[in-house]
Length: 264
Image (cartoon, rainbow, N blue to C red):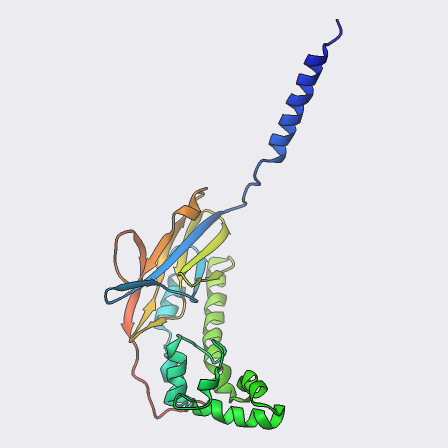
């Protein structure tokens, strides 16, 4: 008996649907996701901690004991102490503090920063040099940072980066795995992706300044294969609270030694 047209059509439709279903299967991720939600509480106010870097080290804090201990014992120089040691003016220190900036590249230098009652002396000096070099105030202001002393321009960042590089190198030697890092967004959220299930150490490596204190996190993080990881944030905070998984060690900022000066 010859197959009917209806039967043949049905077979074709079935095969086509099967092909489409296979073709539309979502790709399987090689690992899982850790969603960080970092918040800080100051008085009665709570906000997300923005623009701060966190690191993920393979292995528990106990397995990374030497690394964690080195992080805790490292001498800490606050932003204010560094810049005071570098001979910065109070106006520059306040300009950096206003937006929690670590370098002069953090935000745009506006006309009010180089003239009037809110002017920063270092910016005025660099502006004057730039006007002779570039022939105009607007261009001189845009390129102002190039005429600042190197230690005021990027010295603090370089010191911090050197400490981070040393810690990462030590951690990778101890754990035998690459250290991962992420930066929080303006809401204090960040994602570590494509992770192998296991235990990790979450750390900010260098203390984070918050008001008159510093915050240091070194916490155990169990990472499990979970398709809903995006919906389950790992809550990091400076205070114990409901659902908080990682609480910072909070320490008063050191008193600055105003007699010391970094090489200009």
